[in-house]
Image 1 (cartoon, helix red, strand yellow):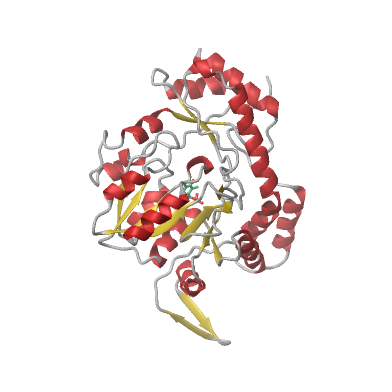
Image 2 (cartoon, helix red, strand yellow; image 1 turned 90 degrees about the vertical axis):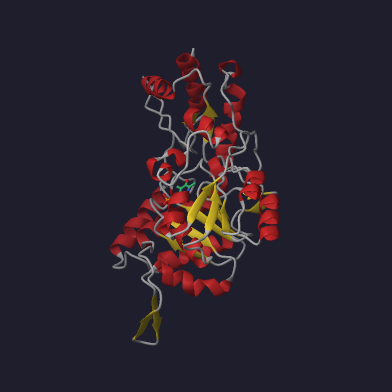
Length: 368
Ligand SMILES: *Cc1c(COP(=O)(O)O)cnc(C)c1O
């Protein structure tokens, strides 16, 4: 039996591991010079825009909403087909998440449905680039401009992706990234926020750490109840060691995705993702199983074949928390159907071409 193939695994080089040991020995292990260096590198990646790091992509989203002035009485439109953090942060700032259905082909938020859901209370949209496939930024920002809405791009999964050749994070309103262990670039846990404007940096730093404002040798004041969201230098050093590999990781993920399209048996009647090899960073390769297949048995069957399968994600408006706020089965048929049948197959840079073949063969066997 070959080794178990997980659906993802981080690739960390020896220089990064040694670099982390160096930070641990340095006497300064929480936010310090490594965070500054990571932010500078991320800012270069984002075309020089200001970037600040956080201890998670969730904290990053929450701070973006606060910087955008979103709070009680406001509505924020988002997709039900995402990690639940995307909507939880809206509740966290006291606003109301408003879900709309997804486009069944891209599995990303349906921008026509966004437009139809706008009310007098709508202040922002949180689009999510599911699996790293970018939401149409031209239509998104055209809509935002026409309706005077803020945009908080949840680009947790799309670091390294681009829209028509423009790197995500280098343009637009707020752009939020995550460096969770499963993301394309990791710092174990962490996140980064690309800001639309240099003038927001001071407030962003206050919201990150208890609202503290320092001045001179000993001056300290607080004017806002900030969070405790700072990234450690240990984590930042991991992220710094990952960034130089971004281009190679993304290319390898695209090659592996291509391989899936070549080898996947079409007779299995699974829905495949859009074949985008230029914009998406292929954070995940996800198929939607046919309705006749029970996903739990598929996952168990694949595990018996030595292959890990993930679920990203069940439609979140059907979670108890959101049902209790009034959301119901039947409201978003595409998101609900995809959420029931979606399965994440192994895809990570250290995989070999024959690993892809192994997955395709196993799926054929299990679905037969
Ligand atoms: C990972 C993820 C987040 C949250 O990031 P954390 O770093 O885990 O807090 C938010 N949204 C999406 C779409 C994600 O995939």
